[in-house]
Image (cartoon, rainbow, N blue to C red; front, side, top):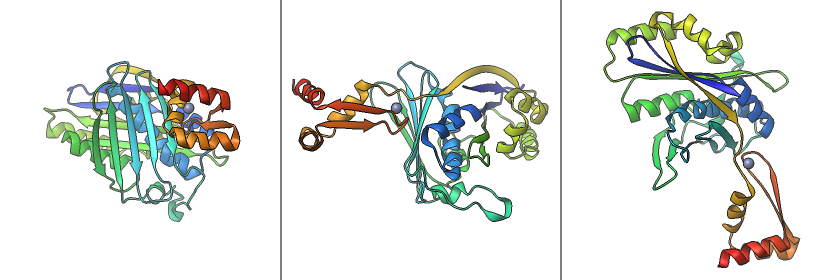
Length: 294
Ligand SMILES: [Zn+2]
């Protein structure tokens, strides 16, 4: 479990979200057995979902983030529900690319690709979901989301996301900070914020050194006199169940299903978010088809 901190400066003109997401990103990596760069890319998106989950107000709501560039990673998806449960998916999880040599930095930008789009889907549990979409800026995820928020909210926004992967491929540290000016902010507020940000180390090493978001706010944003308003739990956990998988199975279509039964006399479906396997016998499938026809 990781904890998302919501905070505000003393003037109430700048809001902060900060999370040490090491635990949920390591759980994500263990679930998918991702390559190093895939861990970094999907870890950043998953951390962003952990932050954006704070927009969820009602039980049936969920927020889905999709990033699709022209790089080898293919599509990346991260979804959060009202319980703070997050699940993520990457199309090409085993693919890796070389790091940028001069600073040994994982090259997430090339991995995701900068030609493409990101989409934010807010599903309210009823009616049409709200979808916002912007072009990618760099494929580095944080910059892409900063641009998304700037365009959608028209307010100065800072997004910084980082994942530090250890030599044994496990996640050494991960975290994210989202800072946004609120209507009524002053130039002075922004000047102070910029000064604080300029002193901020890269976020992946930041969370390696300072584990507690509280400490980071105190040390690096001291001048802003930030107050913590709320702390929310975030868990990496898939919400799939047999009911949902049955629906996915039926969506293949009766003709296709019958073809598979004829050949294999059973169907095995794997949840692409958690890799859990669901088996259906010939009899069970025939029952399902029967019920679907009614
Ligand atoms: Zn699942």
